[in-house]
Image (cartoon, rainbow, N blue to C red):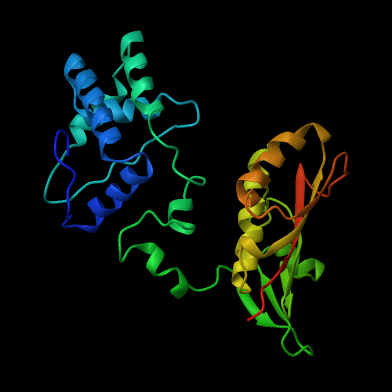
Length: 275
């Protein structure tokens, strides 16, 4: 697409998806200027544009790997891709790349939201068109003796041992138990990392709510308990990434003697809209 006019029609789903990302990031003219800059740097170092893009991404502290797609049977670029690991940018390169990328519009949402939340930046027929057909993440069963009350279990060993559910739905109300970053086998996730634990916990909480027919937009109340009050800002930032558009009522408490090797525990309540 370098140096090409903006296409009116695109033949395959993958390129349709890429085009949606281009549009969301600022449009075709901005994209062409970015490609021109990448091309200049690539020619200077005798590498491919893909090498420059991969090396630029890997230069960020939060990035440890890139995923490069392949069209098996059509093309083979494995040897070329390795050149990205040896590519080093000088001051001039970085200034040019920074200027080109600064002109881009930030893609909305967090990593992975392009597949999970509107606007879906995927082509017709992609994952977003099949989300309703996916089975619940957690097992859902009717509570014995309470017709219409449903519970969701995450498979944690502690749910059976302590006699509680990950979440319970009664009518339009969903209550999610206090949740820690624990695998189904009972092992802690992200030890001594409150921020990482919060990410795992909120994914687990949303999975429970979604299994019972709700979503992030239905959450009306969250409570966060911290072992160390000093972790409040990092954990709050995770909460904001998930609920920044929902803005549920929230309580945040520090200095809590949590059970087990955990730095954070979170619970939530959701209220579904009228059917």
